[in-house]
Amino acid sequence: MTKAITEKKTQKSASLKNDSITIRGGKPLRGEITVRGAKNAVSKEMVAALLTNEQCVLRNVPNVEDVTVVSDMIRAVGGKVNRLADGELEIINETIHPVNKEELKSIAGKSRIPVLFAGPLLHRSQEAFIPELGGCKIGKRPVDFHLKALRQLGAEIEELEKGFHLTAQRLHGAKIRLSYPSVGATEQVLLSACLADGVTELLNAAIEPEIMDLIAVLQKMGAIISVDADRVITITGVKELHGFKHSVLPDRLEAASWACAAAATNGKIFVAGARQGDLMTFLNKFRQVGGEFEIRDDGIEFWRGKDLRAIAIETDVYPGFSTDYQQPFMILLTQAEGASVIHETVYEKRFGFVEDLNRMGANIQIYRECLGGKTCRFGQENHRHSAVIAGPTQLHGAEIEVPDLRAGFSYVVAALVAKGKSTLKHIYHIYRGYENFTNKLFALEADIEE
Ligand code: EPU
Image 1: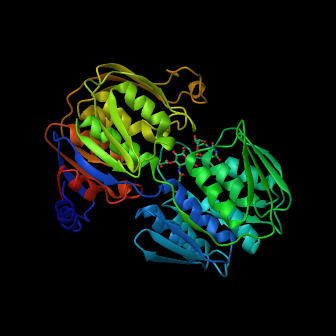
Image 2: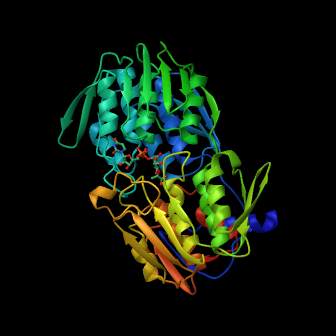
Image 3: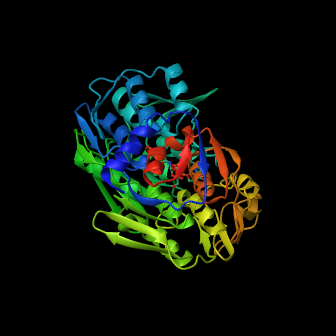
């Protein structure tokens, strides 16, 4: 694909603002796309900027809905967020004022990030509010780990009808053990403990690449954080933090999604920006199922090998196979020869999208049992969290309402593989995490229209 053609298609797709797309499947995706900064890192790094009154600059920032939501939340507490250039954000929080609960509630319904404002706001204004959170409906997603950790760090928490009111004159270090290595709770402790009095030892912490990137930001700001063996993170509190300049790590989840799209449609996609180190576990499974890839200095090219074959997958916290790889990977498995198994151990309700896939012609059964090497938290609780995918199956077009982000992208891949026309409604969910995804589809020569 020449640059000129890509640009022409990009211009054409600029008008594609409607909330539904039509996809005519059966055409391999071919070409090159670029992934920018990870949605699940940039939003937390924006929150880190609340820990200082100095200028903070983030680069490689994707144009996704979550960035807009967090920008609105920062403005709601008195901060300033300016777009300096494409992909470059400046955040300055010189003064922070008490949260306007009503305003925050209306923003919070769209995201899970507001819970992470707690620590920085307690440091800046001795008071914070955690509203009811939004985000994808893929399980109960409680905030009990967050609240327990914040209490241990010295916050007083009052439960309100819809949310929690927090106060603390000063947070102090503590020894905190998470009962599960939650990404959000780990970030909560990092963002709360680096300005607390004394040392915090966090046991059973999550160590996702996005968390390491947040730690890199905090270190640039002046924090003292060590990541030790066996999921132990030690944070030595400092008196103040400073501004930073940081380029956000590339989005491994988006890269993996396009890899699945390449192999499922029997095409070939070069994902500029994808990094081998962050994608090791995904690349192993991609190879086992029959995908091929070439790692280059500036990205990774993905395509389908000779045959796709059934495999077993168990989602897990990093360095395991991410739950966010699972949905697009499942479309790949519908095209593989034999019976594949996915055991979902991170969220209890992440197979809601399977019903529509079966309507498109897939043959997927969901089970309550743990169909995997390990018994997980969900086995005894009757959650339908294991899937058996019989393949290969011929998918056919359908009308589908997108329920959430990753399921939404999976439907896109399913529709690209399917025979005939599919219409996907509510695609705004996909824009929450996939920058310019319709533009990218145009650039990859997909047959799509408004
Ligand atoms: N959990 C609790 N209590 C808590 C916190 C978590 O029981 O207080 C449970 C959750 O219900 C879930 C498990 O622990 O069963 C893991 O949740 P975690 O806290 O790790 O997830 P999160 O921080 O809410 C982030 C990503 C998710 C990603 C998960 C797991 C962001 C904004 N979200 O969520 O990303 O799936 O980590 O890696 O970073 C996505 O990108 O589509 C997405 C959902």
